Length: 104
Image (tube, rainbow, N blue to C red; front, side, top):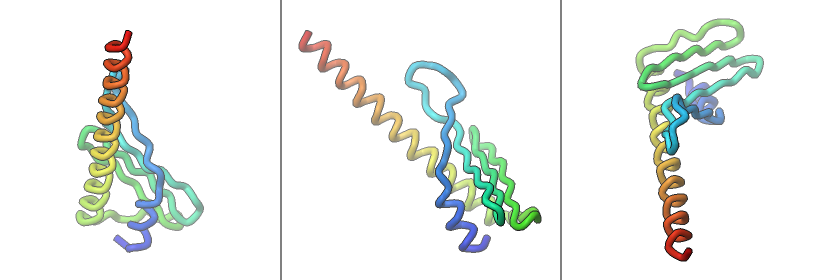
């Protein structure tokens, strides 16, 4: 994959989703979307299943196995990081609630 394309993928703001509506659920999906004229990028990783589509100037870019590995690992790292942040948020929220309960 071209370095320019890798860098562009890294600049896209990820969108995280949760499949369930349970209390304190964790994200299980990350998506990257870009449509800016020259590039159209639509990448999604959900439950270890990667779906990737990259277009350059109206021609579909043929993703090689090393491209797929890069995209999968990058999205998986983003998802792992978001899961860790979410856990930290829940822990902090629980700590504050326990503290409030203690002083009541």
